[in-house]
Image (cartoon, rainbow over all chains, first blue to last red; front, side):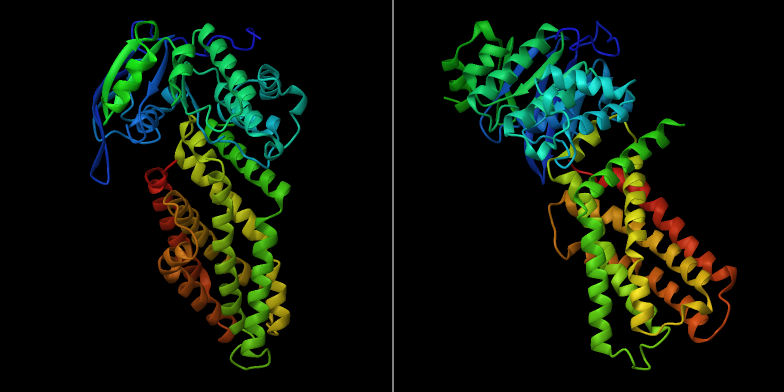
Length: 246
Length: 225
């Protein structure tokens, strides 16, 4: 299993933070969503981003995923500015969302092969089946994604996000809508990713789970960083208080 | 094979694979096209002088336009159903390549819509044998320009979560000059018996070049996950 979750394809500049954000602002329709976020995340860290609805968590992740641009401020991944989001930088990012980002009419194997080809992965067929085995769906490789349960679909979605061995994994509410067994399976995958040295940013609502699976907790409130501590140095009560601003 | 070409072919193959699996788009648009021809044929009267012959090209255009709009909507909806567009946008591919692949997929599907042409020919007693090559050349060039704009606007409409008739309302005014130009060329050939010459096709090619270049250039800016 560890053999499949191998090292990222490209080596990183170890001196540069995986994520560096300086005074990042984002407004949508003149409504401020992010109001000057400053962050630095080292390679290999697993970080949970928590906050109430509208705190700016998903917007921050979208900016880091190059899906939208900041209104002001600077964001860098591995020392490279997101301003122009070059293809070589996007190749280092893996994205997981509460949506599957898959084609439901294609099989799991076809989905993974398609994305492997887009990323120029050698031998896409082998890569696809290896990843499906990793997420425990090797025997369902040729079934259409639309026939999968939510938990199975999310596992394929994680396999898709890992197809190009990204250095940075961005996960926006990856546990949303999953049952207990699927949550456990996905948690295990995140543990493996962390053990394999990936930098992981997870947006989540579950404080206990975040404390369990991540090294570091960041709380956003009103578009600003309200708390930034190691998971071992904070508590559910403190996080909850920071989230609600009490 | 260059990286861009490989990516375009990969994206296009995916679109066609999805279509082969679901058979939704081609089936729907073909049925819609045939229905339009039949309904207009019944409404206008197949024997009416106004619709006999060259007038059939106008009816066929109406069928191509509405079928095309449905085709553009359906092929873009595939990217939106489970947010796959976000995965494409994060991938290290030029977003212009996403546009070109989607355009080519739409053109292939619209070539399938061409099966409604014989319906028009039969229903309106349109003597296509006068100049079949001219008809194919004019319609092909016009459809390329139409699809170029349609592919772009389908991305805009799907990004803004607006559906329904909005796409048609956006595409038709922009492509109207192209439709008028192509209709004029067909009238010259099929009604007046005149040769359209290279200039006529050149006008359509100019429209195509303009629509393709502009749409390709702005596609990146209209995409939203």
